[in-house]
Amino acid sequence: MSTTSRLSVLLSLCVVFTLPGCQMTAPTTRQPAAPVAKQSTAPTAQQPPSIERAPAAGGGPNLALSSARGESGSTVTVTATLTTGGASIAGTQNDIVYDPKQIAVAQTSAGKPDCRANPQLGKEGTAFNFLPPGCHGAACTSVRALVLSLSNVDPIANGSTLYTCRVQILAGAHPGIARLGLSRVGFSNPTGQSISGGGTDGAVNIEPKG
Image (cartoon, rainbow, N blue to C red):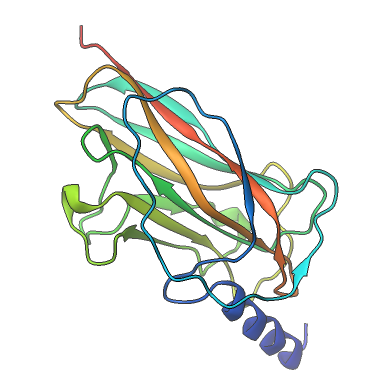
């Protein structure tokens, strides 16, 4: 790809992924998750200006979080997987919403979400941040995940793992199902156009100790 073409895609992607909020305008559909005892609400944020959208092929792309199980006080791992639905997807964005009284995405020593991009995708711009902005510990209620590269706009293969996150089950968590809700799910094609798609919630099954 020429330098001019890369700059064009870069400008398009900067519109789609409106930094630093990295929100996307594409409407999303949600598949039902397992019943939960308590739900969190995604933080309210200003919507970015509308942009040109490319039609999705087939049933449209979908981003799905896996489920995990463990006792209170343990740490589990969840995975985000992309189903392209026949669309050409070069980048994605989503928020993971959780109940901080039951579970929380683990933090690194630098205070960032303990999430790891799939290195095989070559999306070096992939980033994770806690929300609301500037939150710490139990004040954080969600994580924003952005899978993106400003130099590699090759489509992501169907069925690819996008990233994994370590999730802590709090010591005082009650047994039951804790939802890992997906919100603000968005997709971008290699030319920077937004593509409509959906997301499937994950969950953590908190098991009684013993």
